[in-house]
Image 1 (tube, rainbow, N blue to C red):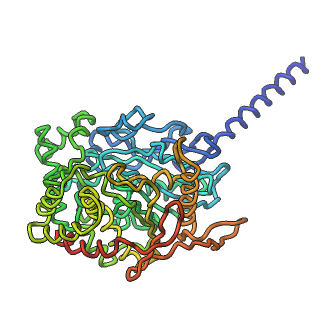
Image 2 (image 1 turned 90 degrees about the vertical axis):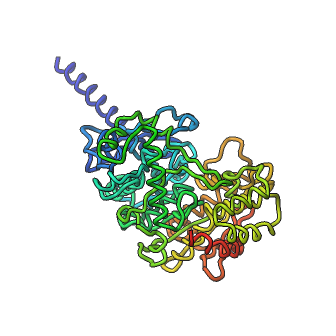
Image 3 (image 1 turned 60 degrees about the horizontal axis):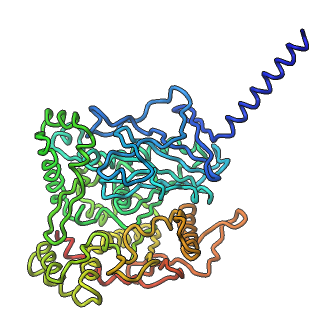
Length: 527
């Protein structure tokens, strides 16, 4: 009888040991909110769908986010949370679910990372014109970053009207308005700053970055008092807060247009700008809200319907351009860049010369419009090429130069020009907006060529270096920092700027857009 009892006890203890070790095989972290368990995936550890704020529903719709409550038990971070409600979410295959309860983040970390490792952290903000996008899109898979010793974090934030509806009522109630999505980003960064060491990260080495609207947001966070101290480096891919038609340099115009666009949105539901109107909007199906707040811009007629961040002086500066020029922001190292043909995605390929000229007249007025037209009409290429070059400058490149010029007064700035791709603008759109994304993440599709993979590896490696060491030229060899690249990435200098051309062969080049952007600057600053 005694032997039987001993055998049963041995079997029980052995089973307990096996199950305990099986549980430990999955990535695990202990936070002040409670323990979190993730999954092993493609050689790295991933924690999916961790909530960083309460569900922004009910009275929290069109309101600042609230910190998340503690977990009642181990949080199983094994699946992505719903994506933000948006008009085109079904296009983001294979994600099929969308909901307002979407404020979560995903953590990709190296295998075996643990509390105390002090790994560099990169927090990624997706683009999508503030109307679409999600943190779980396959393009943003952080496996390559994690395999290279970086903790990569992606997170959801509210978009379209759910993230950027502005009203006098919410301004009165909360002291801010229209920046719900920006406030989500700040809340996510606070979560990361508080808890990332539990996952092996270094809270003193956090880089934020994004592309397009994500770069707009990252640049806005550089200028925002609410985000100070939450990061030390920034990566801006194809975008800044100075991005017409989303936003220009005129703070008063921003306020007027943001409220006007929001009023037009609310009128569809017959909701007034008062307490009862706000309550009414909080009862509407979120899908209907998203469908009525898409991005609309007509270049030729210079008309728009865009729900945009609001320069309220609380979440964002009331005058971001003045804040930038005055240097009233934290010192951050910067990696910033553009693609050769940023504007092709946003320009009608069939645009005519007369339509292009008309668009400039409606944008600047007759005299200034003619001056800008004369400048671009001298450029080589088709009407589409000239118009799309202007569009790319207006939406992305001009703001990039202004940020690079000003931020370089405080810290090192490194600029890139992504030029790898098709040359035929008229047929293919050339090296268009967004084209660099999978190269940065080193996450190419199956049909990629050997040369594609080579370019991706080199670009990704330089981004990794910057995230780790604030310098794309410094990398690790046998645990030591070295600076032995034959091709050096030059520091950006305003007077004689050089940038790194990322192409089939990576090399420094003169900043070829400098004179064009200097010409355009006074036309937009006055808007």
